[in-house]
Length: 409
Ligand code: HEM
Image 1 (tube, rainbow, N blue to C red):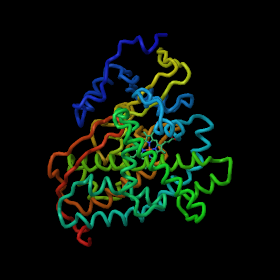
Image 2 (cartoon, rainbow, N blue to C red; image 1 turned 90 degrees about the vertical axis):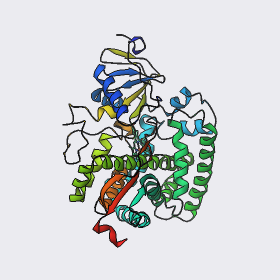
Image 3 (tube, rainbow, N blue to C red; image 1 turned 30 degrees about the horizontal axis):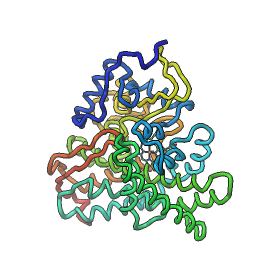
Image 4 (tube, rainbow, N blue to C red; image 1 turned 135 degrees about the vertical axis):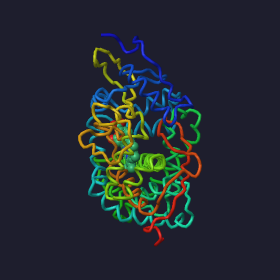
């Protein structure tokens, strides 16, 4: 069986600055039409949905957060150590043990309890733009809401801005520019860790009903969670819960401005917002690639993947697989796509811990805005970020006519 290294594969350069918007999807679709595998400088890209699910779901494979740093030339220091000890780098029983402790805070039911607060936050953000008829959506909503929600979850009112800045810096690990941004990422890790260590000590002394207090109690009980794991887990929630949802909200608004007919559908029935959220996540996954490390040599579809091979599963092509979705190339919030899970949140043991929360934030945001914003259009062209790491929107300037529901603000 041939080794993946000797195959003649097409090459993808994810750092190519022209890979944005429609062209990004065109290039990926072209690669997917040529076969299920492509090559990058850092590893192999799996373009096919079934193969992607097999790799993501296989418990023998690890999430290569440490290897992604090593491939970028970072082999030591605080970022390296913290990444090595983080939830994503853990495998098997060790991963399951830590993950089980934090899962109850992210069930659909637990997430539903945050919805009234999310709506209050949206009211607050809306009150600043309602009169204007214009919003730079990234600055006014997308960047603000997720960090406000994470601050609420962790019991840190007033710290939302700080959490957003930290998340931005911590996510640098996955952006393929970690070596250049090393000082900035290291400073963020040191800041977050010392802040959370103090916070955990304080919540042990004076517990409240937030996630930090719960984890602080569990780590105090002894062998279930070490102090370091407790701090690391809270850091993962800050790193994972802010930039991601921010980017997905921004792409959502960009998609609605590009597809006014879809905005009209949502305005006609805002209760369909959960389905709209799913379609935004399917059509433009802000994690277009999620990764795995082959820890023992494995064979799949007549190809040998040697130990230490890094594979990137392309969720962007998997989410547009015509075998799984009707009219996959159309952004259409009116179509029910009940049977095929989207891969935006990954799949298998590392499936996104915050998926329910992210869905709730996206659905609440667009259900809230739909009756308030009529006739959306771009006030200036939107600006796309690079699709490596988290595929963000840098700006989404929107003009709108204020709807009846928006006049109370
Ligand atoms: C639209 C928003 C989000 C997207 C697209 C997203 C995407 C992802 C993806 C692709 C993974 C890796 C899954 C895999 O490889 O199988 C992941 C893991 C993770 N996410 Fe999210 N995420 C989002 C929001 C959040 C939120 C709100 C939180 C906050 C709690 C969060 C926390 C995490 C954590 C802690 C992990 C690691 C899980 C593990 O290793 O067991 N994410 N996410």
